[in-house]
Image 1 (cartoon, rainbow, N blue to C red):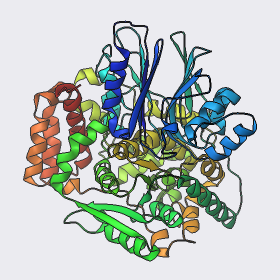
Image 2 (cartoon, one colour):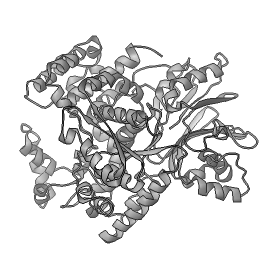
Image 3 (cartoon, helix red, strand yellow):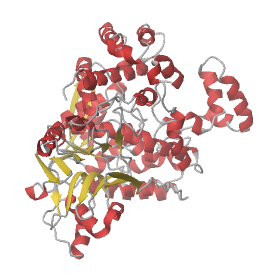
Image 4 (tube, one colour):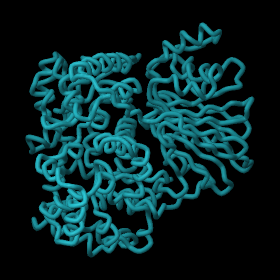
Length: 617
């Protein structure tokens, strides 16, 4: 886990060395081991290093080729770097280090931008080609590593880096709230637009690269998620998963520092742990709870069976609330996935024992693990009726009071494109519009946001369509973002073996009925995992990383804490606060479960206060 930051400016009014140093210091948590910067005319590159591969100073960054005509700052890991290095040495390239970073430099010299197609790993990098006077910025296939950019500066300077907070140190950066971001956030629970909550600051999309030359930005896609089904037997794909995952974990364990794994009670992290067999695993749960809110005993049992030392932490409710501002600061943008907070504590625990951690993110998306992907028996029976009849019933049901029956008939007459926007759906759009002040209502609808993704897979089955939508939005915007930001907050590197290019190539060929069927979700993956895991772990139902927030909101102490925030002058800028208090009271009195509504709004207000009120830029 490292951090990159840089800028391109024609301004002579700033001390580039001191500015880049301040920007680098802001993301020091990403790389506490060393730093470095480089200035060449209007290009300035800065780097914070967390030592993982080649611990010598030969691997320090910025890194250069032999004649200093190419320089790079790189965050991530290239897992096939040794193979690429051998290939490039055969072609005459001379290496001064044993680092994966240098492979990109010489690979670019040999193949140009096509080097991206040869990489296997997670990355965000900026490469300055002095001869061509062009800056190449690229992000990995799935969006495991974050990368932001902006020209919202007083003189049109380009800023780019791993974290938005570093931009705040640039003298010409114009910090403004993007008013269009709030309404979609209330529904999706994360920043779902390409433009972030900071006006004019954008995320470079996964699988894309940017070339900046002569003050102009040109962005192109170099990779897309492959879903090309090939019919084969269950046994065939079980074998393929076993073979491919073993290889992926072998690559992901490469490190010159200690490696461990996160371990919950689910099949994904358990499978990775069983393949990795690290010295130590790490788990968290919640004090005073058992069952789904505390699976540390399950993780401990598996660790014991595998002969691995397990470390645990139980989180108290006060610890949870106390750390929320810190979590949102590290996120850069408001993000209301409740699991981000326990993940923060999990990373903190692991950082005391290891520097590289493996985890199970991505398995649900590529192998079909979510409940949304599964159609109930009742719905399958109903869908045998002609669509035009179900559509007519749906139109009637939508006009009736909402309950389980009307919801069933409404969804039964809708296409997947109309009812699925991704794994997280907090506010109904009409509720979001109702609670927001007028300045924040003008934003794209959820359907508009995911439309482009659905168009890319228009001829696919419904499960594949939902997987693709999740992998384009939910995975990089929520799951991978919190994984990166919470681990980097504690100066550790989190690796995700399921999100490997070769694993995806294989998984994209598996027919939907082998992923999701009457028996289970992630069916074929569970069968493969069962070869190294006991039945209890391979077949355990998915529970995610649940947090007992709904219970806490029925306790007067935390009810009053949130109520004070909901009635604040800050809240009144954005919301009809009487509606917020109404949600809070409904939940407190046990009338309606409004926990997700409450948490999503509360997180936004905590984030806004940190970045726009409690100014410490």
